[in-house]
Amino acid sequence: MTNYRFLKNQAGFTLVQAIFILVVLALLGAAMVRLIGVQSSTSVMALQQARAYQAARSGLEWGAARAAAGADCKGDMQINGFGVSVVCGKDDFTEGSQPPYSVYSISATATIGALGSPDRVSRTVQLRMR
Image 1 (tube, one colour):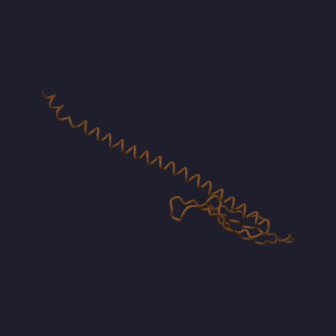
Image 2: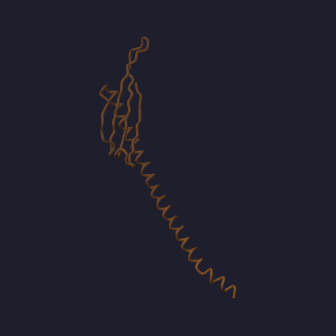
């Protein structure tokens, strides 16, 4: 008789366990969905950063070619959706009896996305050339 009363008192405990397990599984599922979303956005941002770097390199090469030709190497352009800004400076040097020479400092910045937005990417590369 005592065994039957013991089992009768435990009748609702299985329901509590089942609800607890369902809540834990739901939380784990939600965490996995969020983790997958973060992982995919991370890979997209890594790709955008690589594209921004290559766009900045293109702007840098454009500026270097213009400087080598003796032309103005400052400018703004669009490369594959990235706004690229090229800034150039020139310093003239003379060393002893050597003929004077110029050193160009070129900087190119590629950006995409609005300022303050989570998907904004910006890369800057610099070059000094004689």
